[in-house]
Length: 197
Image 1 (cartoon, rainbow, N blue to C red):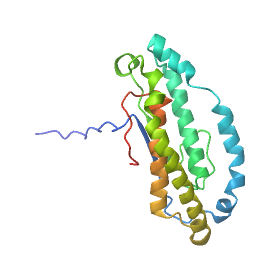
Image 2: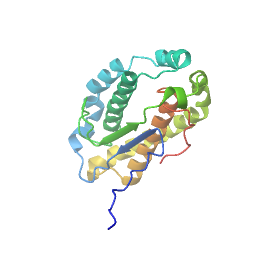
Image 3: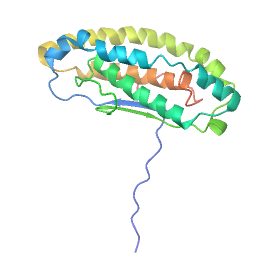
Image 4: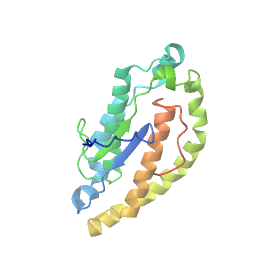
């Protein structure tokens, strides 16, 4: 008699993943209209918490070839928080960003084995190697900003975020997050793809 086995979960295709649930319902038009004001307090908190730099992590990887688990956990928690704030600021969600609950924004980073998966000298050049991404993301960011303005009007008149605009803005966020995971969070040496998906 053959025993059935549970399917084995396949590993995530990237070291950094971001997913935001599409709000398949009417969004709050009042908070959307006043979003420029309601986002100020949480954005201030985010900027205060985000003042810690990645330079100590670069030094740790360069000289000790270590990525302390507590540091990774901090980077993951901060990435989750900043993604929730960004989703709120970009009108992707109308729930006020929580400082500790995931809400409808899923962020995942794979903890690296620093000795076996991260090359010692890479932290010194990743910022430079990511330059083509930063240039493209600059222009994609402008396009995403235009999409958010269009979505603001769409939400005010229809209550809905147009799905195509939503997917584009989330795609730009996802691309940016993968580049940050490579160049700033240092969780992978695999060069990020030039892709929105």
